[in-house]
Length: 190
Image (cartoon, rainbow, N blue to C red; front, top):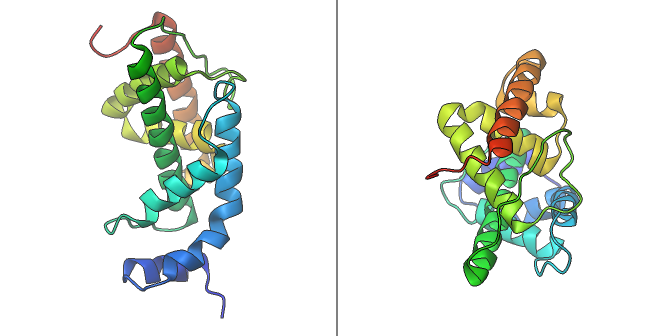
């Protein structure tokens, strides 16, 4: 018997052996497409592959005994955060190796990430998202869902438990807020 996503989530929360093994095939292709999209925006020659990013994100999501999701939208939100953290950690590790370089600014004119999304841009965006999260966590989560997983506004609204109109207003505000921070080159500690 093939169980639904929600049934598998409940089984994982109960600690049922093998439930995560059943969940991976249900979400793998979607997570791999998200990972491939994110990695396409990374610098050429990036050593992290989409498959590795999916597996690392999945391990972090399902390897955490305290992780709970209220449905597929919540799972996607957690996957977005997990992939973002993995990419940021990789960028920080590379930046630590080279210790320097000029900050590059990122614009959020559209939903899609720039074609060339280097480690400095990712770190700038991560720092700005951290500031936004301190001011308004929901708007920061919305940006993660739109920018890092490519979800549509209606999907984001459902994942966040808000109306589409609220998600639209939050998206407009968050884009303007981030654009201003990134344009000014504002980073924590400056």
